[in-house]
Length: 324
Ligand code: MBD
Ligand code: FE
Image (cartoon, rainbow, N blue to C red):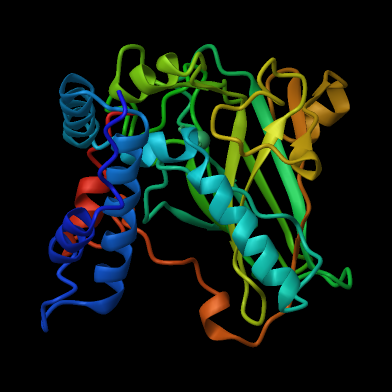
């Protein structure tokens, strides 16, 4: 087909009308972005001769994604979360805010309001019979190596089946979610279980998109962190456990070399007894370095709809309904 209408004055005028360019009300940035976004899609329809069937199948897919609150899941799958990280890295580099543990994506499964502890917390409720005990510890320091006592370390991860509490209603509230304030030496320690990898639910709209691209929806075993302290840049990151088949093949593109951490199996009875455990465990060490900053807005996590973050906010409540 040779029909190409995008560059005609009729379509360009139409696009301006669609984006409210000729209206006095509304928001200028919204107009500019909608003009660009809709224009790019009009052009794409023209260039690829998108059929009516294809267009309405696309609309249906968007409805399916929305009805299951899966855009927060598709977003990392299509690389948007990592692309935003690449941009933040470049923004930091331009501002000469270098050093510190690298950031990587938050993902859609954080839940605000986890129980708080000082120095040490047990994160799992003991109900996961397949879970192998994990002893997770590290020190929070600034980029000069000085420990940061009282640093706030928020940790969340899934169980041995890949399920996250809250989103997986079979688990207790806040299972494997804790906030630990680092001790006087900047150290935090958690007893938990080794998480398994995560897989996008089979047949879900996100899975449909990935399959159409010949891609899988698997993530390696990983543990999420928010780390913050006054005078330091807030860090959103994750560790990926070494040796997982998906460590370097993450559908969410979150793996960074510096964040791949081994889980070391320990069966020395003295080490077991020291931690008051019943048997062998896996030791995971993750030290964190935070960049310094005086800018208050860089010391806190950016706003985003998050489960239980704000019970007055509908977007926050909606984030908790994700079928993930
Ligand atoms: C996860 O556990 C996750 O961390 C991301 C980014 C996407 C889906 C599930
Ligand atoms: Fe995750």
